[in-house]
Amino acid sequence: MPGGRSRLRGRPRDGAAAAEGNVLIYLDYQATTPLAPEALEAMLPWLGGPEGAGFANPHSPYRAGRGAAAAIEVARDRVAALLPPGGRVIFTGSATEALNLAIFGVRPRQIAVSAIEHAAVLDTARASGAAVEVIPVDGEGLVDPHISIAAGTDLVAVMQVNNEIGTIQPVAALAETAHQAGALFLCDAVQGAGKIDPPQGADMIALSAHKLYGPKGIGALWLRDGLEIAPLIHGGGQEQGLRSGTLSPALCAGFGAAAALAIAGRVADAAHVETLWTRARALLADWTLNGSAEQRWHGNLNLRKPGLDVARLMSELREVAFSAGSACASGSGRPSHVLRAIGLDDASAKSSIRLGFGRYTEASELEDACALITAAVAAQGALT
Image 1: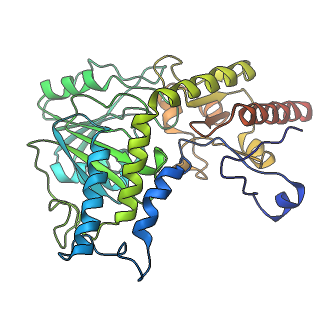
Image 2 (image 1 turned 135 degrees about the horizontal axis):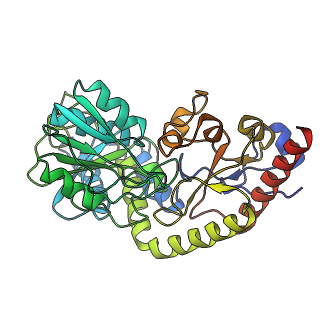
C-alpha cells in the first residue's frame, strides 16, 4: 500500500499510526492551508515574553506599543496589496466576522445572494432581518452575470471562488449588474485571495488569513473608499471605529507575511497546482467532475462516483485528509447545498468527495492518495 508523507511536517495521526510509521497526506486545502514558515517567522517576535517588547498593546502610546502598531500597519499594507486599489483594510477575527460586519454594517432591507454562498453569507443574510433573494447557478456552478436583480435590492453577495466546487464567478460583471440596480456588491474572496486576480468592482471584500497559508484567528474586510458602514463590535473604537478590541500584532504580522508571499509566489504556486490537477484528473479519470472544469480554481477537485459510500471511504482512509464538502457543515449528514444547487440529487451529492491541494502538496503524496482512494473504492464495489 502506498504511504504518503505529510505536509503537516510529518506528524503522525495518532499513537497507532506512529507505531506503524504512517503519516497524514493532507488534501483539504479549502478547509485550511498549512502555515507558511515565513508567516510563522514573522509572528514570533510579537509573541515574546516579558523580557522583550513584542507583547505590547498596539493601541498604547509608549514606544513598545507604537512598535507593535507599526508592525500592524506594515501587515495592513501587505494585505491591501492583494486587493484592488482605492480601499481600506479592516482587520477582523475571521472572514465570517468580516462578512457579518459587511452585511449588518450596511443595514440592508433586501439582499440577493447566490445559491452556493458559504454559510457565513447565507446564514448572516437571513439573520440580518432583510428580505433574501437566492440567485440560482447553472449546472456548471456559475451565476449568470446578467441576472435580473429585483427592485429594492440594496446588497448583492456573490463569492469569487466557491469553497466546495472551486468555480470562479464573473464577479466584475456581477458587480456592474448590482450597481446598475442600485445595490452594493459584497464578495467573499476567501478561496481566491492570493491565488487569482482580486475581484474588481466590489464595494466590500472579505478575506481569511488561514486560507492563504497564514494563521487562524484573523481575517479582513476591504471597504471601497467613501463607503461608510456601521460597526458590529462596539467598545474602544479600534480599527477605524469599526471593530473594537485589541489587535494581535502576531496574527496581523503572520497575515501580512502570508499575503506578501502569495503575491511573490503566485505564478509558481499556480503552475504547481496546475501540475497536480492534471495528474489527479488522470489518476481519477473514471470519476465525474462536479462544476466547471475551466471556470475553476484547479486546486479544488470535487468528484463523484455513483453508489459510493463516502462516510465509509473517509473512515477507511484515515491516512488521507480529504472532505465531503465544506468543513463548516461536516458531520451534519445533510446533502451539500452547493451540489444540490448545480442540479445533483441527494444520492449524487452524497457520493461526492473534495480533494484540495496547493503550495506544499507533493506530487508523490497526491499520487499515493489517489491510489489509496482507488483501492478503497474498488473494495467497496467488491463487497456490494
